[in-house]
Length: 374
Ligand SMILES: Cc1cc2nc3c(=O)[nH]c(=O)nc-3n(C[C@H](O)[C@H](O)[C@H](O)COP(=O)(O)OP(=O)(O)OC[C@H]3O[C@@H](n4cnc5c(N)ncnc54)[C@H](O)[C@@H]3O)c2cc1C
Image (cartoon, rainbow, N blue to C red; front, top):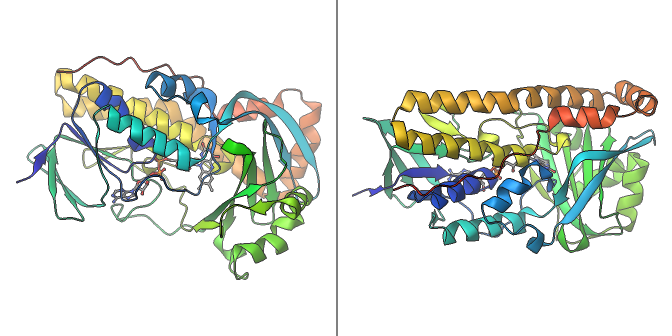
């Protein structure tokens, strides 16, 4: 016998939890599957754009109570020692995924979400219904499925290999609490910003080829990250909080479908913006809102084609240009000649950096308008 649900969500990161919370608040039966127990650390820069703050608060998340840092300034540094400072147009906050995902999961559970700590192994669509199987050989049935399983999952059969890997760790160090610093080094870039409790997040993305000759992140840090004087100075006075840094490989920026086999894809499962833009989490949360709103309308008209078209159109309108802008910024910063030129001309053109940042971010998104269904 399979368990029946209104909506099944696969993946309990920011996209899955936000969609689950929003839909549970409307009175739907939502079953969400997350393979890891909460709380857990994730490889992420942990800077969240303020564009999603009113929406998260309208869903009941007490952001201020989680004691995030408040970030309003941006610093770009290069391996040649150049620096450029700017204010952030909207700003954001710094909060560890350990704390944020846990808080969202607890809130969603309180709102009635059925949270299952297990891995989804298979999804089949037959006679207008999804049949979802889990590692514990349970079967769940639902008319709707949201895939929010992140950048890469065994459920994504056709993903190509990616040359990028990422490393993150937390440190105790003196670092301004209102600043996010993006620091380039040969083959990659590293973000530094405070999360809660004055802890500093250091997270970098690098080509796997560049990392390979070194035995571990510590050796790589000393040999390559330290070529950037700002990073060298930071790491020389920073004390690690983790036993060892966390690393992930195969970070893919490939284009992905928004709807596939009738499954609505949210967050990184639909597409990952280059991390240097600091907008992936806001996009994951915003895409969850778009999916929740399209599903709410679906329950009025029961037209699957209309649901899929509405979600695809809304997703493209919000995110297609941002993803393209992110790719351009990434290319400029990865070429020492172009990034030096940018650092030379930016001070001569007031407002240039905030303008570039706006291309990779969105405006404040509206709070949730939650009506009780059924
Ligand atoms: C190096 C790096 C730095 C970044 N820095 C920032 C930043 O500073 N600011 C920012 O806004 N964005 C940043 N991002 C992007 C941000 O981390 C992502 O966009 C965001 O985490 C997407 O959330 P998500 O919910 O889509 O995926 P995730 O948070 O990855 O969640 C997916 C979840 O699905 C679960 N899962 C996977 N497969 C299954 C399965 N089969 N069954 C059950 N569960 C499953 C996973 O365990 C995971 O918890 C960064 C990304 C990288 C790589």
